[in-house]
Length: 113
Image 1 (cartoon, rainbow, N blue to C red):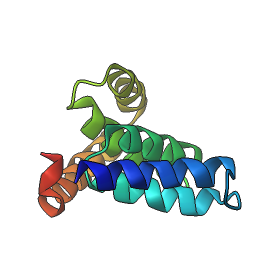
Image 2: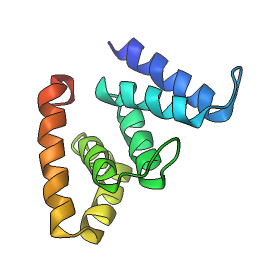
Image 3: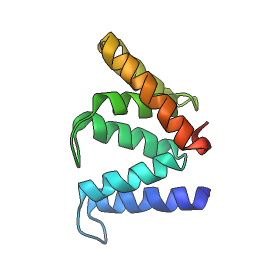
């Protein structure tokens, strides 16, 4: 499974840079999502960044908070810092929505636990 995650991240990076393929940020976001769901911490952080900035699609701060949180649970320092920054800047409603979404994602993707 790790090889699949790595291949998905590699494809996302190629699409992000337009290296060997046409540059396509929306497609890179989709590949990062697949790799993130498969458990790649790198992809979880990159997906969270894309979601926060609205790169390759609409911005979604709640989902960005969730993916930073998932990566932070794996003791990634950068993810911890980004999670804390977003969490402390969020209101109670956004925090509750993020907590609910986190539970849904963890239920749907057991590999992330």
